[in-house]
Length: 114
Length: 112
Image (cartoon, rainbow over all chains, first blue to last red; front, side, top):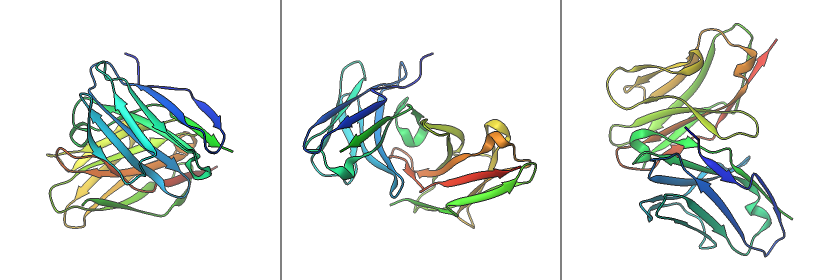
């Protein structure tokens, strides 16, 4: 079966712009989580959605937002981009609660802010 | 709150030698523990996980890990390293019905 699909794979944006990243989970997975990965900070949890509801949220500013649709697909949005937002953004899906089942990760979206 | 510490951001071993990547966790309730591997320009792939039951967990690619509650550890081992094992490895912890917290990762280098 298809894995977790993230689009686009690469993005270059200018400081101050906004960006939307997309994630399609594995069929049947209802939980989608987002992580930011940078060399200095490692994997930082952004948020988790389950059945269209945000179930968990990390310590990121309000410029970072997300949503989940009825088909479990998820998007995350970053507004007013800053240079420090340059990172690999990883989406991960889980059958139900991630802590109980573990994640399947997508290949990520590499965002570069210039 | 849960946390995980990976000892050593870089580990080098010779091809054919034992691989040992160290992970210690902190949790006030019984933890669920995971090891993931990440190859360049890819997402993370689950190697193995411990939830309950047998404390020695076998994973893919010949890796295994042992949950030691008394030492709050979940070290990852492989008897004989291959060049293809060169990657970054992440230990992670969660508790029932909660999110997963990742360590900062250990980059494994395999020397020919």
